[in-house]
Length: 168
Ligand SMILES: [Zn+2]
Image (cartoon, rainbow, N blue to C red; front, side, top):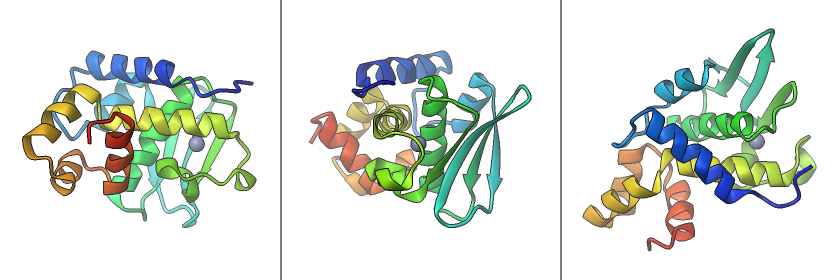
């Protein structure tokens, strides 16, 4: 088991995906990323508490996302699950409860560990708001609301990212 989040590892994997898919303008095209990785997306009316799941059926990888949630939140959940997969957290099935998204986490509520959640959340931030794009676009407007709209992320997720990267 990993005991400390591997943030620079998460960054490297996200940056590789961004460059391999030639992503350079927001919003990051998650469908393109998913097909590049070989993951099928299944929007599904899960119970409110469930954000997303990652599972393997025979040889097929599936991310199921709660399609009742706000589209921005769905994007974050999808990116988070891609993170679990590429960071090797993968077992047979992962179920992510809603508290997990965007940095909030309730350990008692989850089967999988906190370090993995931190890594997956960090990865999601890297994927949806790559540093070189965010720096460029944020400096143009310096308006969190506008940039969040452009990137199709929540303002909370953007704030977390801007603070972490010390852009604000
Ligand atoms: Zn998770």
